[in-house]
Amino acid sequence: MSLDKSVLQVKEFYNTYNDKFLSVYGNVIQAFRTNNVEDYLEYTFNSIGFKPEELVLDAGCGVCGPAAYFANKIDNLRIEACTISEAQFHAGKTILSDNDLNGQVNLFLHDYNQLEDKYPSESFNRIYFLESFGHSRNQNALINSCWNLLKEGGVLYIKDLFRREFDDEWKQLRADEIVESINRAYSYCVPELNSLLTALRKLGFLIEFIKMPDIDKNDFERLSISNEFQELFGVDKIKSWKNYIFPIDFFEVKVVKPEKFDTNNHLYFLNK
Ligand SMILES: C[S@@+](CC[C@H](N)C(=O)[O-])C[C@H]1O[C@@H](n2cnc3c(N)ncnc32)[C@H](O)[C@@H]1O
Image 1: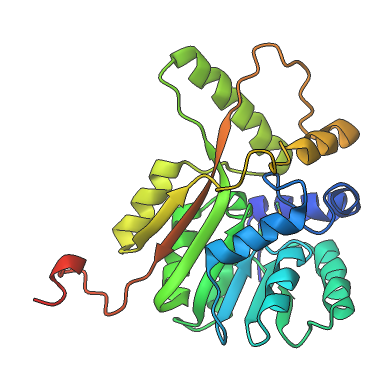
Image 2: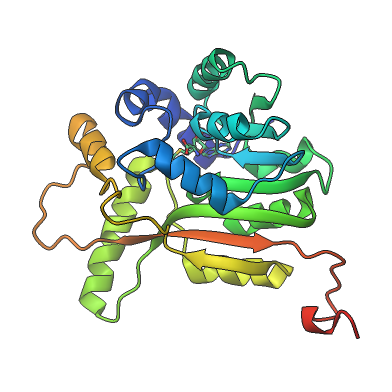
C-alpha cells in the first residue's frame, strides 16, 4: 500500500508521540472527554447506538481504548479497528490480549483512506471516527468510501473538532490562525461543518443528528488533558492567552445510509 505524504506524516506523528500520548491520555486519545473517561465512553457507546451481531469499523482507533470498551459491552459485536501507526498497533494488541478481546476486535494497520482495497462494498453496519476524521486531507473522498462500505441502513458517526465561525472578521482571522497552528502541530485538517454536511447530503446520507456532546458541564474534563500534553511536550503550546480565541467547536455528526436508496426519489415519496 503506498501512502500519501500527509498520511506518512500522521503515521510518523503517532509513532513518535505514542508513549507520551499513553502517559497523558491513557488509552482514549481524545481532547473532549469527561473527568471520568469511562463516562465519556459510555456516552459514546449510546450515541453510536451499537446493536448485537453488527460488524463495525473503528476508523482511526488509537490503541483500541474505545473499541475494547464497546466490545466488552456486547459479546457478539465485531469491530474492525484500524490505525496508521505501528506503535499504536503494538500497544493496542497488548490491550486487546489483556482484555481477551482478540476474537472480537480485529486490529490492523491500514490507511483508512484506502479501505475499499481491503473490504467489499456494503461490509459494515456502522463506521465511526472518534477525533480521527480530521487527519484526512481528502475528507470528501473518505465520506464517499464510507458510503460504499456501509450496508443499506448503515450508520456513519463522526465526533470531531470543527472550525468555529464568527461574525466578527478579526475574531475569525485570529481563530483561523490558531486552527492553522493546530493543523500544523497535529498533522490535522480541522474539518468545516458546512462542507462536511454538504458532502454527506450530496451522497444521500440522512442526518440523524448534529450536536455538541451532551454531557453535564460539571463532568467535562475542560480539555485539561490536551493542555497538559501541550505543556509537557511543547506540541502547539499556547505561548500567550492574550487575544486567545477558542477556535473550534466539538460536534457529533450521525448520519444514516438509507435503505432502498433511489437518487430520483426523495425519502418522503418512497411510498408513493
Ligand atoms: C486523536 S487519535 C484518536 C484515537 C482513537 N479514536 C481514540 O479515541 O482513542 C487519531 C487516530 O487516527 C488515526 N489515523 C489518522 N490518520 C489515519 C489514517 N490515514 N489511517 C488510519 N488511521 C489514521 C491515528 O493513527 C490515531 O489512531
